[in-house]
Image 1 (cartoon, rainbow, N blue to C red):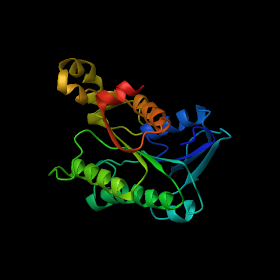
Image 2: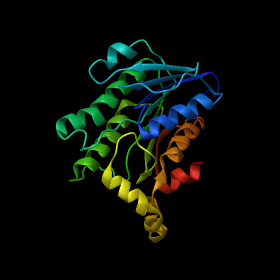
Image 3: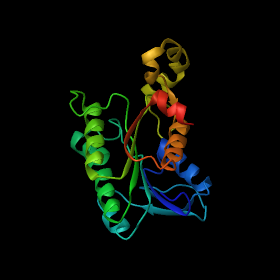
Image 4: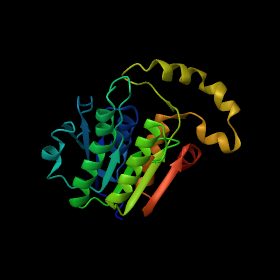
Length: 221
């Protein structure tokens, strides 16, 4: 796996983790071109960056001729923004899987996916089941290298207000002190740390399916 002149595509580039991923990719000399997919665009004029404003309805037309080495899937909605579960599933599962298939057919060999701690396709919880099914679908795409990141509570400033998450972030320093041993994977983690781990891992050349929980993600950077 060449570690120079690489190209990457980031889905969900204006999200909490996606924004950091774009920044780290642009600063990394191994990447010569970074495609950033989002609905609203991002504020960045780096010459290595190519912004593509799109959504699930027209993404195929926008990226059908793009070939990249690495796909970073960082997209995710919330119940507050998307109350309809069918639409929620379409955004968090169908959309990134569709992009994954398009890129794989154009030669993309590696993907990094943001999932969630507790992701389980057999879970009765809608969110955890959705994340588990998304992981399973990514595995089925057949990338030569697939890195699945399962962070717990993300720390960072979002563009939109999530009240319960805001409260959890404020309490996280105290709660983290109570989570040790096997419970370390449930400690909070900065979104920036997850993003850096994703970019660093993409350059390791590690093959097959690899899953990283919170403690492992922190150990990667």
